[in-house]
Image (cartoon, rainbow, N blue to C red; front, side, top):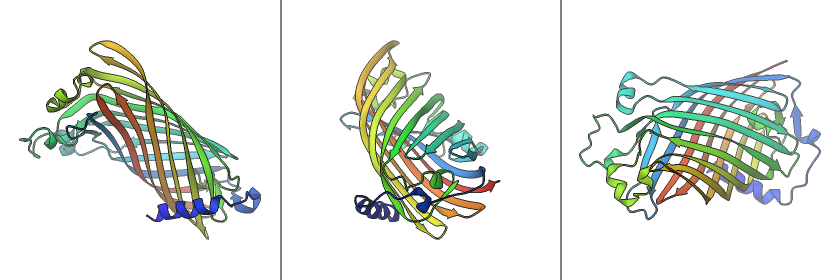
Length: 321
């Protein structure tokens, strides 16, 4: 709620805000390299339901929440990589084993920025079998898809209106925002989502509601979307709170296999992204906590699907001269 309030205050001020000299609103640290390590709790929710919503959605997720990563940045360029922390043997017996990695590359310069990513999950399970199997017991293993893989990769190109706003102060902490400031932004989203399994993964009791999708076992979805938004940073001494929100529409190219036949279609899609960050940006040391949500829709055949990625990150870092 606090972040949404900050965004509202920033938007109301942003329409009358005049761009200022970046020397007066951004401090550039003399350190050349920034190193940080982070612990994250991330979620992927792959949701499937029929287009008429006659049954409850099937939710497929990985058995992988906790990850450990590190990041380096140099001037305007930054990169990060994280891997999964192993689950307990008991957890893997009940929910299966997930292989996971996440790689990101960022570049921000003056009024534009670039955010590229590659995220891969292999080995998933159905989170809500109780909705489809009345006799399901919580003491038994959940329905598992050990060979099912979801891979997403792509990039976001971001253009901001206010030169005084610093993305580097939020992503890298290689700069420090001197005072509270916001900006209108435009995101160009290009994203590829690859979903693959050995066999169709529709719950047996839901097959009758979407027989066409029930014959699919793999697909590739290319998204092209424009998402306008707003970003705002509140600053108090060396502490900051930041919020950003984007929402837009686009076109999705769908290439998938159904009954061993390849299908190619174009469909509209919806893009939504929200991020909130708070932390301390000192002279040599910094820390922050951030939460983000990224939602992309997939509408094909007689199904309605969403891929929602969310993550809660705890980061600490140092600057090296």
